[in-house]
Image (cartoon, rainbow, N blue to C red):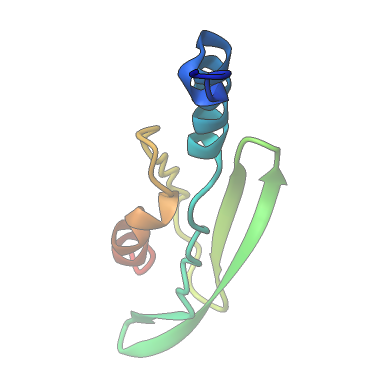
Length: 100
């Protein structure tokens, strides 16, 4: 006598399992690392950098990196590609652009 099948062996059980797996995979598995750019070298001097959030939405945040006491320079907009990675992967690019 076999008895009742396990829930996982039924079509409803497999659907429930797939839905649970989908929810698990949609969760954020790690946190965004900070840019951690405290200062840059400008004309032989260390200039402090202030990182501030200019605009915040549930989808993203627009960050502004300001140099304290540095000369006035043109603004540059750096946009991270939407490939599933955090924008902090562009940390080296932002650090290189700040002195110029």
